[in-house]
Image (cartoon, rainbow, N blue to C red; front, side, top):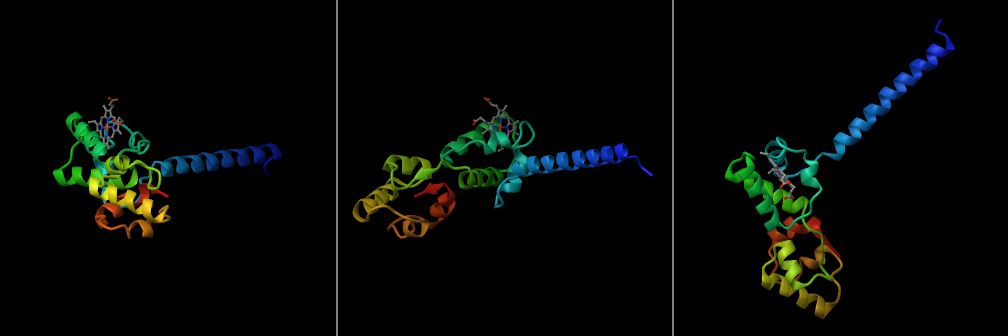
Length: 159
Ligand code: HEC
């Protein structure tokens, strides 16, 4: 028969193990990357020198991510040209710079969302004529925007 003291010790130990397990799980989950094409490339290319939190803490335009990845390759990150392109697209899609489509200037829309100057101008024209754009679905109706760029930047656009 275990003494009351021993039983409470066992309970304490079990609780400690359980709690630290839960914390470890939460930590590992917080480092998990969003699902999607290119995720495995990052998990392969970007973990040898620093943690992925170095990556996921940033929010950059696609162009800037391109220069970061090139910089990492020059420092020794290894991947094929396809890997590099997938990594950049993945980063642009998931860790892009947030842009408020109703208050951003045409220049910011162009630079941060990788729109062409004509596309950015079309957005500004639309919101001037019709008022604030309320949703992604409405934005998709603005004339002249490329569907693939919209899909890539979807998560980065706020209304
Ligand atoms: C061969 C080692 C190595 C690999 C592999 C590597 N990095 Fe880096 N990374 C570095 C070093 C070194 C620094 C610190 C650079 C500094 O502080 O000037 C850094 C810093 C960074 C930073 C913070 C600085 C910045 O410019 O914002 C980001 C973001 C980053 N890396 C992203 C990546 C991504 C994305 C990958 C995968 C494509 C990657 N790294 C793979 C070596 C590496």
